[in-house]
Length: 137
Image (cartoon, rainbow, N blue to C red; front, side):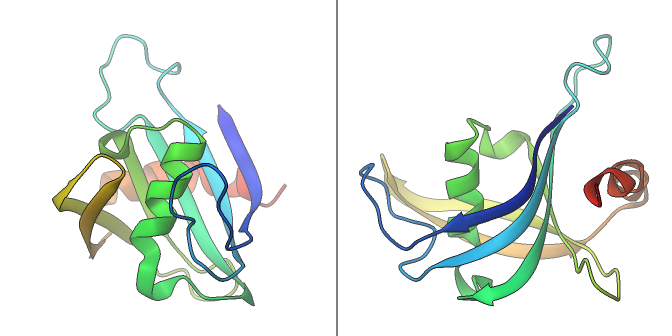
């Protein structure tokens, strides 16, 4: 089930007590899919898939991508460890990378994460390919 498919924007302001994605406005195109209801006989380690691509509008989040991931998980009530986050280019080359987010330190809302990118595995690619045609709608 698709939870969200569209442009996710932020204005660089905060009024909810949490740090915004960025202090400058920007946007990403996101498709958030929940697979937990599709296979009830299987326990999925990562039942949520997020496909993200840069809209190339306003501020680029490239250097603080972990703040985008944390902000989206907070907004859509997704457990960070249960999300397969894939960054790709919607226009042109289809190179995809999977985010590996590791908690380093911090308490409460003040946490520091390390973000690394790895190539997409074959089983993940099949799952992504099943969703990609739905993202253009």
